[in-house]
Length: 238
Image (tube, rainbow, N blue to C red; front, side, top):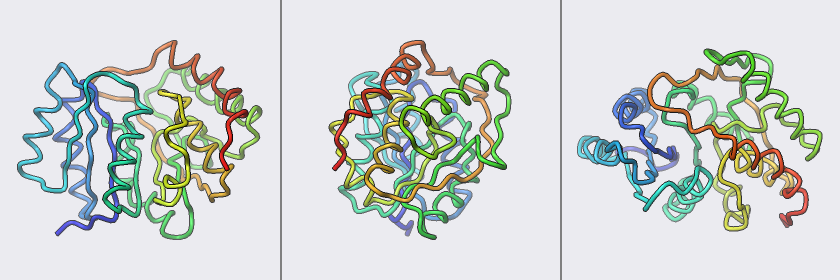
């Protein structure tokens, strides 16, 4: 039987090509991880592909939502689903292989060794980015510099979306009060963890730009993050 200790939450929208490959890569690790896909009514048949995989893998679960409601709300949906089922560790991960499944054990190990939140980081020593144009690398890097200056948090990769939480972190963060949907959501979750006194550790990873599917990046997502950090400073966490 697969261990229910660790749940990997993967939001999906038009990721049909990546589903089987991702499940196979995670199962190959033989760590007993469970996977929850949160699909936002993908028109390309992503949910049907997930259901086909579920027939062979009881460790895989699916939550369907009515439409494209945003990355942040998808993760909150997944967090609540996992907390209700007593998982110890809950992981955020993309479906496009920009996050390497082989790095999952290192994130979990960091939490087992005392971190409350382990971040797969592009910008700590040993971290790398592959297949991104220089302009996007610089934008991402200096976005994190901007966030650190505004929020005064010592996290190099503030927009990272590859993270492992101990369940106690998610139980204390007021998830329903977080209004953000894109990169701002990722920033806000880290900021909340720091403000609540949890230990956050960055683990170097190599981030690789997606090969299949389409990027979800947009001007609106960038603007939300740029202005959202000022809103975060006003939010109450305790």
